Image (cartoon, rainbow, N blue to C red; front, top):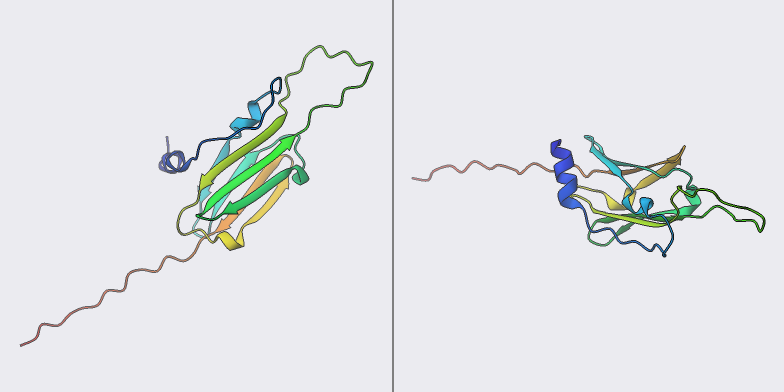
Length: 137
């Protein structure tokens, strides 16, 4: 596993689900890729069949980043007879703690072809100023 993956694993907060009995729970395990570039943290999540209006992206106090939403079930008509239901539906929630250098007030999100991309810009890390001390006497 890559170093970034190990760091991501350490930052995970337990998943909470709101599924009711009978709903498929595959969405509760929404997988997220997290990469860090020199300018930002970039998160990508596959959310097939979910519209951007059904997804909520939030940053809570304490740098907790959260993606949540709900994928609706297919509409059932009175005369329909289902033979197989494998597509997942229900609520999903994924939470991660952002690193200290995240600019949480400048988060941007976009959704294209079922892929959610969230970009969190990074603050420039100031290098510690080193002061040379001259000897006296």
